[in-house]
Length: 162
Image (cartoon, rainbow, N blue to C red):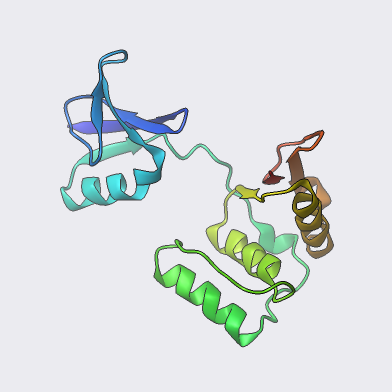
């Protein structure tokens, strides 16, 4: 038996023959459906129960930013500690630092570690433009960065939105 996972409008769905964690049966499509935020729980469940699956949820692009990044390996100790803690916690978590402490550098290092396309969500257009400028200064290839919102509609490998 193999389960096919697909993503649709914020939810993950699969054939009804396997009940996924946090899922409910959606009679409109005759499949089990669960919120996308439970993706890692679903993968963990399938792996632990040795259930074969085809993962069609991950449709983002893989990138290798290492070739495009100006040297950011010179991180402060607390920045290194933040990245290492994030990695230890299965690339989950929230980094809280004061203004000017280097959250953007930490975020870009996390993007490099994750090696995938990334959506950065900020609360204001001003912050969106600040993040864009900061990442633009770090990357050698600015064709990888886009903005969505405030009159911008460029979805790229790294997209910043409000």
